[in-house]
Length: 164
Image (spheres, helix red, strand yellow):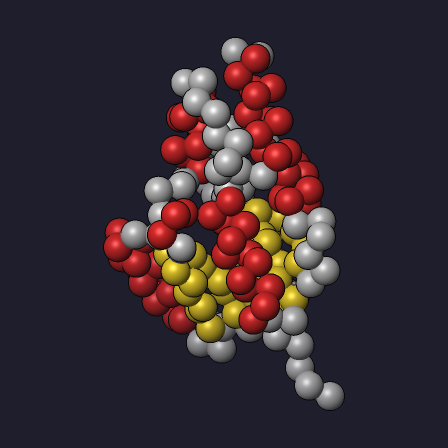
């Protein structure tokens, strides 16, 4: 029996954007299963949304993708991948500076487990300027970001700004 190709797409997704969704959709064509992993990041203490809220937003955005699911994990992504029989970590690259960070991360992951492969997908040019932090900043200034995020995320952003 052929082994399932499982890829994990980790990130903070604070919040998920249409750029992230593009990577997820494209990855879903390459893998039998894609797990979008909301990873706890102790260096990011200024998260706008709770892990529970981020998982809810992602689940809403991926609800029509049969081979994609979302999970969260407080630990090394490599350990999560092993627990889920995933052999691939999926990463999106928007700009050159992303490559520097991802190169270092890939080397660290290789050191931990050389059997896990990193798979990099380039952002489409229309998504290169979209980042979660840009979305938060624009939305907080009253800019309509509905074309840059899934509808559930937009609802959360509108609600967040009304409660300021």
